Structures are given as C-alpha cells and as structure tokens.
Image 1 (tube, rainbow, N blue to C red):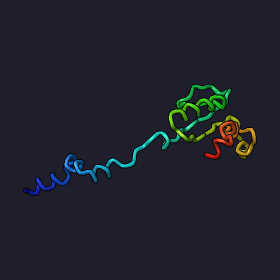
Image 2 (tube, one colour):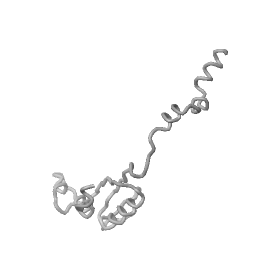
Image 3 (cartoon, one colour):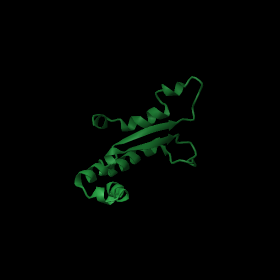
Image 4 (cartoon, rainbow, N blue to C red):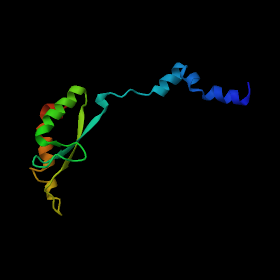
Length: 114
C-alpha cells in the first residue's frame, strides 16, 4: 500500500462510518423539540406590529405557549420591549411592567412545579 492509499484509507468517511462504534460516536445525541426553547419578543398591545422580527402581544402569549407545548417545546425565553422607559429603569421593578404582564399568566402553580 502506498502512502497515498494509506492516508486515503484512514480518512475515507465511507470506510469509517462502516464501523458501528464510529458511526455511533459521529451521530451524537438526538435533538428533540423538548430540547428547544422558543424566544418570544413581547410588545405592548398598542404598538404597531410592523417590525423586522416576529413579536407577540401579552394577549397572544397563552395561545402561543399552548401551540408550542403541543409541538413538544417545553420552555420559552421572554424579552419585553416596553415603550415606557426612563433613565432609572423604574419599569424593571414596576408590578405592572410589560415583563411582569407577559410572565404572570403563564406562571401558574402547575407550570411552576414542572
């Protein structure tokens, strides 16, 4: 066997994939919907929906979460873009902030215990 033939035999993917141990290693773990997390960009109900990225309103979140759950997605990451901002970021601790309103309906005792 020449040097060229030897290096080709070692690096030939078809030859390597023929071995069960190598094939198992290269396949890696499978990815399912339960492994995924959906990003929800939340906007105020009064905002114009014409944005470069898809967004949802607080009212749309429950149905969106139900739809995702039916597909097997078990978690969401919520990013809220409130129109009400100030230099002190007082909206971050306000009990009626957009983030609180987005999370509260979904944070039921049955969901929190999962």
